[in-house]
Amino acid sequence: MQTMENEILAEEGSEQKSTTGPKLKISKPNIAQGAKNLQQKLRNFKKPKLITIFILFAVVMVVFVLLIVLSSRNSSKVEVVPDVVVTNPKATPKKDPQTAEIEKTVDEFDKKVDNLSNSINNYKPPEVDLKMNF
Image 1 (cartoon, helix red, strand yellow):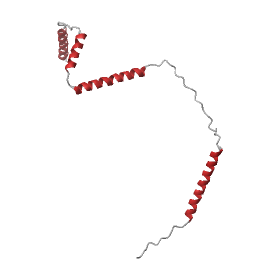
Image 2 (cartoon, rainbow, N blue to C red):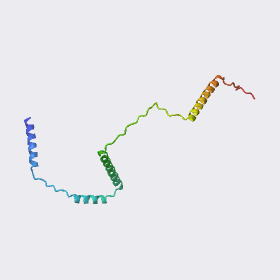
Image 3 (spheres, one colour):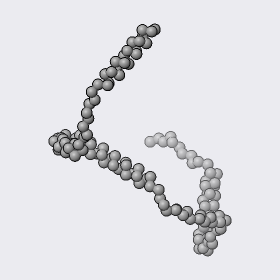
Image 4 (tube, one colour):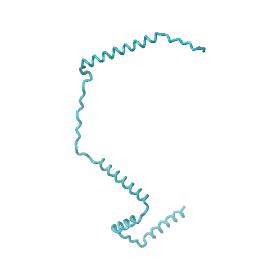
């Protein structure tokens, strides 16, 4: 058990010694030069399908971001909700005398038609002789 602990401590010590070596210098990226390189690479890129997919993706992302921005705006206007006017359901409009007369004649006609259908049911069906000789 002690040997494993010693090995672990030895490995940790060796890692610490190796990281304390010479430091790498990282130069600051030149944004202007990077933009020029990107423009040159895009101009030399000749795959129209991939370019179209990239443009469509960019358009969708821009529209999505714009919709989010528009929906997140807080409106400073106070919306006024108009009062709801409830009408009396018992109020009946006045009927025109001509309309009332037409409705009355329609009702009478419906009653007559109903009576006719009842009287037809009272008749027995016709008898037909289907045995014909020539």
